[in-house]
Length: 470
Image (cartoon, rainbow, N blue to C red; front, side, top):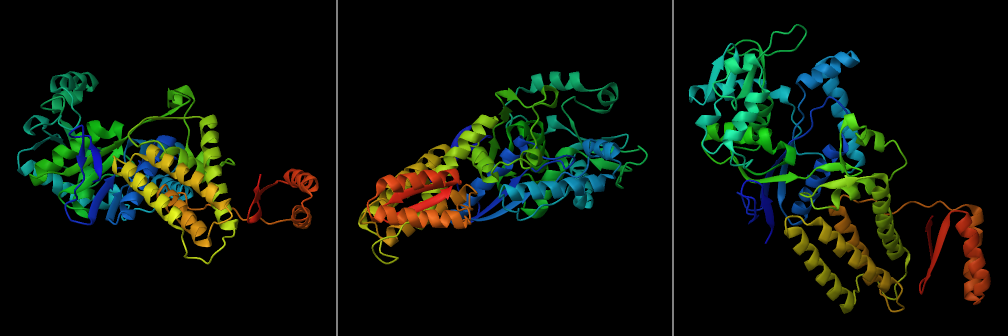
């Protein structure tokens, strides 16, 4: 039985979607004012991996992830670059698409932008006002947190402490407008010149940050959704406020399961521009790293745990992935003794046992760490089988297929690298094969060393020699 850790209950719960075989899932996307950093990418990779696993288990996943394409950060970046808000949003939304494509993140079912739903946002706020859950002051509309029961249920915070903290953050103008320091803006009056604003019954303005996700959930997924996902830093205030306004609007449960991923630190320190350790995916992908190695690094740790990025840790992960590449390539290169489709009982039994362990790991709140251990157990077994004289072609194909499938759930789909041999390498390989056939192992070893200098690693098995790039 699949279990997920629900931030709302702080417990693992049996996962049962509203509609059998179908899942509605919303992931809070980025504000598109700059290139995404490694923390943004970790969230995108983690929930793409979860989505892929759910689809492999047979669910149809309606996956929505938004772009916040307005706000002070977008405005400030536009002033810095001499661009309009829309030009800034278009530029960095395109960069997000390009960078996540390299990380093999599947396109969302829907990728809405906040600015596409202004009429719906205004209508949403009007209904909350009609219900007495919100109030208007000087063209601003605020949500009254005290009128919503269990406002802190998701964040598990103390309301009195929230009031004290909020009061300390508010300016004099906000203090005068708000009925309570914890109340939050649904709509903000906008009078700045050269800043885009939208019409509303309360005058020109812009939506509050939390409003957009509630409205897009409502429009694209429905009143109650199965999974709402995002970084742990969004639990409060963003997701807390989403929950409050959505449940006030519909008077029913907004989200069945809240899933939050952990932080990404850099060299064991919190990532911060002030510390000079701010890492963007855009910059990383311009280096000679394997994008799949970066993806594997972000995916292999359980999504709820914090991870620490460093070049050394990324290199270590790349070495682990290279081992899996070699295993897969070896399975493709080896030759079995029987026709395809004939899988030995030994391989059938072992693969079935490993698949059960893989599912058990992923069904335990998507425990990718244990699932990766199972993948390496499969690779160890596959290396053993491909070196056996009695391995069948069906054995090799079965193992290659299973390795490809499980790595595909992790978004690792390109397992082979095309090797174009030089004429010198081809001649040396032929000479070495002849030497081994003649049992002249001294010459064979010497040629292997020559090939290594040319960048080719040669390995031997009962089926013959195989090679890969060094």
